[in-house]
Image (cartoon, rainbow, N blue to C red):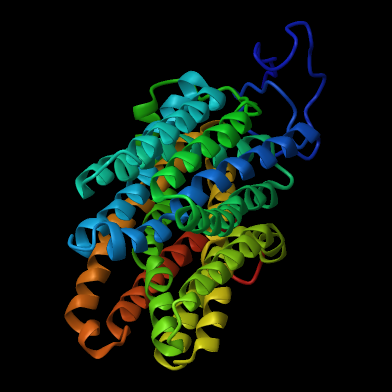
Length: 438
């Protein structure tokens, strides 16, 4: 294996004497520009946290806009047409990951993510000048989602490249930015709309995203040279591997059911409490839980192993939905459920990145993570409309959420089965029994 110096990262005359003794063994043809697990690696993780906080925070704050659109601005339009905005944000952000791997290989992490911050800023500013729902679908939905895709997957991938010893912990810290951003931006957006205007809230949000995300992207740089050969051939090779198929199906099923607690539990809590503020409080508790869970993902993975973490967390999600959504119908119960589900349900983001980097190599992590994120997008596109139909058909007239809850249980059960097969495949490869950490 050769270790070269990237022209845009180190002085051309500098050399790296040796690799870290604790680094995982990459492919013999892997070319490294810098050592992993350095102080700069943690600076990259902090930059990724800021990037994901602004990107995911902006996306998570859409709940505030949706309520404003439904009740005030577009009260005569159908709720289904407005809901397509949030659905397309998530879908485009995840599915765009298929293309970000190729863009990162060609232009690098820095230019790709900076371009995303520019696109997101323009999308939000354009959204502030719209007067129809379909215009919001194009700007705040599709355009914002595509811009976010240029930031989301690369920000996760670049952290995985720079860390080997503490990869899950570093990635967990980075993706915790989504929960932090969700709490901060939701409150900030609501305050700006109330005290200024919703149009200026979009403009301020866009400029803030560009300032923070654009500056954070400047910290990014490639540590490992991209894999040689066609990106299409690389994606095809990864996609047909049984281990990746298990991960892809698992994240698809997770995102088919993940939004049921996020979208319907706040409504249940309002019905039980009779106060509108309960809804926003439930969302804050959920985001706090996701932040804690993502940070703790490294510790949990270290204790029981990444594959075991995914298997256990999805089983617990099934269990929590069954207990709290079917048996406990109190506001306190919904608060507890939101905290527990938020903590457990998003562990897979950091853990999957580590598994992909470990099983397929850090040099292809941008492509493998991007491809897996595209499967998340398919889950969102399928799951949200199905839950809407189930609610309208079975739950709305009874003011209950049994049908959508059953759907969520089935989705997480399917994800659990996929991770069980992955655990068996990885265990067989490394000759590890079911009772050992892996």
